[in-house]
Amino acid sequence: QVDEPHIRATIAHLSSYTNRFYLSTHGQNAATWIRDTWLALGNGRSDVSVALHTECTTCGIQPSVILTIQGTDLANEVVVVGAHLDSIRAGAGNNTQQLAPGADDDASGIATVTEVIRIALASGWKPRRTVQFMGYAAEEVGLRGSKSIALKYYNNQVNVVAVLQLDMTNFHIGVPYHFHLISDNSSNPLRAFSKSLFDTYLAPRGLARRDLSCGYACSDHASWTNQGFPAVMASEPGSASNTFFPKLHTPDDTLAMLGGTAQASTVFALFGLAFVGELGKTHDPNLVYRNSFENLPAGILP
Image: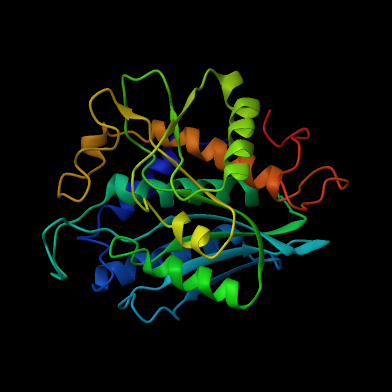
């Protein structure tokens, strides 16, 4: 069961660091905390591992974090769900003491990913495909952590069948929709599948989605798209006057400024569970990924 207090607590902790800048010890410590938190959620399961990706030569002292749930009979097919773990204050340059709490951007995304991990592992879930959850370093300075990982996977010919990026999930004021699916730098078939997924699992709960173009690379999904992997990005619904949280990249990107709640992020945790549940191949053994996205079988959510 998706639990708003769990998501809120993760946002609160991550936004308590002075910043999560890629050159600062704060940003390094935040990555270590995410690793330790995810490792604890694995609870010693032999098919769950957590590693730091330290091969990025332009990510300063900040590693990316990767939790892997090893697949069973389709282990060579990989599903990725990620968010970026760093933060930045606009105009602060390389000041390692800049005040950049980054509650929405993107502690909310990491907290949402963490909640998907928590629920999936607490249920004893075992996917047929390998599922990886990633916290990317140095996104704010050019998608550097995800670029490093996506390039490594391309060079190693890893069969990544789908990637979901969650960037800013917790700002929702007064608009009748709850979820933006970003059109930029995304896979058309995977985006169509994601709409079908939302309509199957979330629409019956009274939730609504909308398409959005952000007009640039937007987030780490672009790194995967650039290496030829199918990727999509989901983001917050915003408000009537602001598509995204207007306090991003400022000292006011705090949980308090987001209303002190993580309710908006619960929608993205539900979607993330549906995404890994279906694409991780929990169900019908006759549905195997080939060149497009499979039909929706019965799923993991009630």
